[in-house]
Image 1 (cartoon, rainbow, N blue to C red):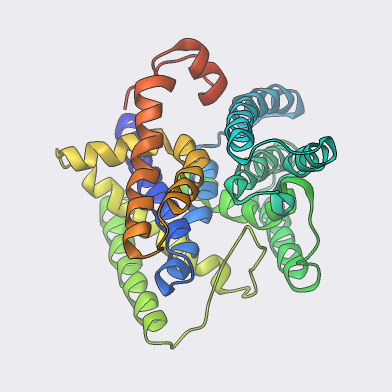
Image 2: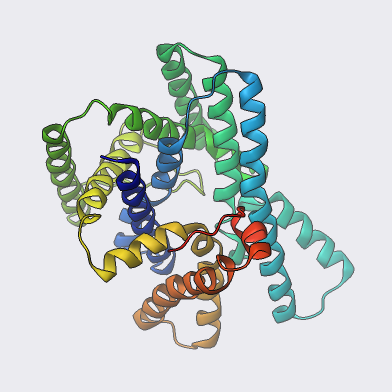
Length: 342
C-alpha cells in the first residue's frame, strides 16, 4: 500500500469515526449509543498513534512537542472563544461574578465545563497530553518491552482511578490519558506491523474483526453482555474488554476503510472529506445540536436525525467554504498554513 493510499484510508477511518461521534452524541440513552461509545473516541487516539513517528532523543522530542501543541492549542483557543462569544450573546447579560466563575470553568475544561456546548473539548486537551506523554516515553525508552510494560502500568492505573477516584476532576481531563495512551500505543504498534503483514493476513484480520463485531453487537442487543465505555466520564471498568472491544471495532473500520477507498463514488469522497475536517465537526456539532433542541419544542427521533444531519453538514460546509480557503482562518482554526482540499 502506497503512502497516498494509506492516507486516504485513514481519512475515511476518521470520517466514519466522526460520523459515529455525532450520532453517539445525538442519540442519548440508547443501546445504539452505548455501542458507538465502545470505539468512537478510542479510534481517534488509535489513529493519532498510527501517525506518530518515532523520536530519536529528548532534543527532537522538545522540538516536536512545541509544534504539536501549537498545531492543536491554537484551534482549541479559537473555537472556544467563538463558541463562548456566541453563547454569551444568546444567554444575555450576567453579573461580573458569574462571568468570572464561568470563564474559570471553561479554562478548567474536562468535567468542569459550565455548559454542554463545551462537552467535546476534553478530547483536545487529553489528546495533547497523550501525545506529549507517549512522545516523551518513546524518546527515552528505546527497549520495546520496557515501553510495553509502562503502557500496561498506565492502563492499570487508569482502571484504578476509574474504580476508586472517578469523581476526581482533573483540568482538561488529562488524567484520561492514562487510558488513551493505550489506544495510542496500539495504533503506533499497528502502523509498524502493517509493513510485515501481507494481503492474505489482512484478509484474515478483516474476516475475524467483522465476525467479532457482529458477535459483540448481537450479544449486546440480546442483553447477553453488559459492557459500557465512556472515556469522558472515566467509565472503564473491564480490564479485558476495555482493550479488546475498541481494538476489534477499530481494526474492522480500518480494513473496511481500505477496501472502500478504492471505490470511486461520491459518498466515499464525502466521507473522506469529513475525515479531513473531523476536528471542525468535533468542535461544532454539539452547538448545532443544542440550537436545534432549543428551536424544536418537542424532542423526538426527528430532532435527533436533524441534529445528526446538520451536526455533520454545517461544520463541514464551514470548513470547506471558509476555514480551508483563507490563510488567517486556516492558521487559527485548523492549525496549519497549508490549504488542504476535501
